[in-house]
Amino acid sequence: MYAAELKKVFEVQRKISDIHPILKRTYPIVVVKGDELWIFEPEESKQTYKLAKTAKSKTPLPEGIRAAFPVEEYDYKMACVVSDDVFESLRGYALIFHEFVHCYQFECCELELKKSLEVFLEEQAKGNYSWELNYPFPYEKGEFQRAYAEFLSALERGDAEGVKKSRRELREHLTKKEYEYMVWQEWKEGLARFIENRILRRLGLPENHYGLEKPWDRTLFYEGGARFIEFLTGGSPTDLRGLFKSMMEF
Image (cartoon, rainbow, N blue to C red; front, side, top):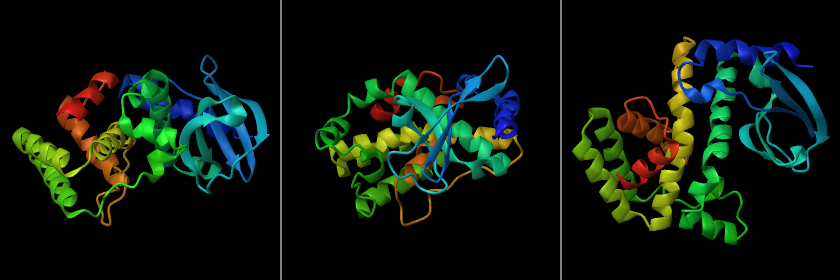
């Protein structure tokens, strides 16, 4: 099952692998069908995937899932987790590679960087393992909205002093943990969005700039982070630890 669809992952990869070194790797893909998990492993030498195992999901997963996380039923190995409708469009394949970016981040340095964050340590101590999804960030706070809007505007202008000024204001108006949460999302999701949009451009598809519409939520940082990464790196973010440090300290 899904042999042709999964083989296409490698076909798309050949078209995009020069965009960024991360894209030269493939990762396991878990296809969610109701409460069943179909777990496929890449065979890069054969440019295909093989079925490694099937399992019953121990926790409910949302319909239309697009995610990357260590899968309990797969010995907590990192994988791209999707529903099978992802294979219905070329844009869906771009999203698979978006999730592969998260697999690489996890493999590279994610836990190391998280351990430097007070917000991570505090939420873990509370047992809030979904903190990246549900942290109570003050998106509606007027001072935050004004400062982040100016940050986006300065990025669009290419105004380095304006970017620095808006980042200082964000530090002033947010608590330390709120600021850490913002930068974490800008780094983690911003990098994936940054690379996803370059994939979409290569494939002749419209870019994804979702997240700027109000009311704001964490997807704001996907777009803000992607634009910040473009500003900081000129389009070639390869040192992920250094990138995180730059985003935190700029």
